[in-house]
Length: 141
Image 1: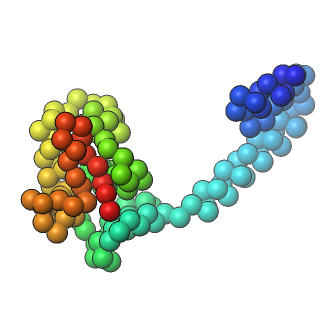
Image 2 (image 1 turned 120 degrees about the vertical axis):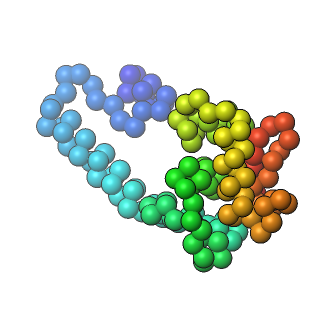
């Protein structure tokens, strides 16, 4: 019953007591092997519209031309590109990109404006990084 309950609530495996340390070691090695295989299979490229982000090298391309972004701008783009069409409030951006450190509203707006200047055809009329008034920002392609 404990095994079924554990697996039912989301466990990947269950070991009943008393357990054999050799079996435990083998299970751990199998999990590590599976995790490494899953990592190798992940494609480091995220492509949305004209943008391609290489998550291994942290280079962003628009129409195959590299855009030179700061570390925070790249972190913002990675967040937006891994969650397209999701609206992020300023507070969510603080937490996700700045690690919940104190950043004022002007800092977010400055980074968004700099990012728009680099990724948009017309930074004054953005079509990719759009403001959702009263809510936050969304990346739509």
